[in-house]
Length: 360
Ligand code: DNO
Image (cartoon, rainbow, N blue to C red; front, side, top):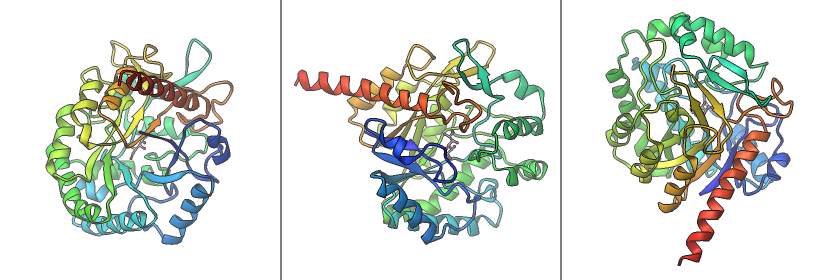
């Protein structure tokens, strides 16, 4: 496995590459051109400039998260082919600079959704929090306003103010998109892009839905074992795979992350590791990575990856906001808890590695 770190770019992230360099065993930067709207052309010079910056700091650039998928593709409009052509153009350009994996999602309208970006924890830290009754009880605009206000001028992928300014239009456009239709639209998209991925050796790794259930009556199709199975089987290719995000899938007690990690072993190209604590009323809060702070047995997930000789990419995902960084850092993407998360993953992996060498 190769440990990576999600970084938002020089003028867009308070955490510098030299700071990241001090976190043990981080080999690669997970990057993107964050100013690009879905469907916009990625220029070669812009890609090269970002890649140079990252490589000059001694990191690999193998993983891009995300190249966002235009809504017209998800909705299945006639204009989708135009946007798929642009997507293919980006895949080709990224392959040229050595990108190996692209993480993307196929969630309608919203990416990850929370109701509170700075929920106060008992220990004085704070975390992203999802309060079920709030999402079920209010209109989508209220949640959008809450999130954008909480973002403190930080860009948050999936929550682009420009796109969300047309919220009602977006909802209207999705009104006939059922779960089956959305699956068909994903299949259509994959059927067109995967042959190019095979040609240029880029793996597509879809990110699961977060939370893993439909919200605001919008369908969600990457939220359970069966949904993931549909995705990897609908276009059978070594380039069509998954990002397994333990925190996204793990917000539902129905998703057994150890089974998912094991059964899809040949299809997982990227792991996002974080922990969540679920409450019986459907709420959940993001916790530290430690396995017994939340409901996800991260040690067992790591053991499964280790047993399966996982060789792809992994990153410590979201953390709590610690030691005064709250409201200064990008929600979920502070420095401290993600760095602690990296060390937790290093600790588990090194222990597994050492003990398997000893028994050889
Ligand atoms: C949340 C992230 C997601 C992810 C996208 C991939 O923190 O894991 O926003 O980047 O869904 O397209």
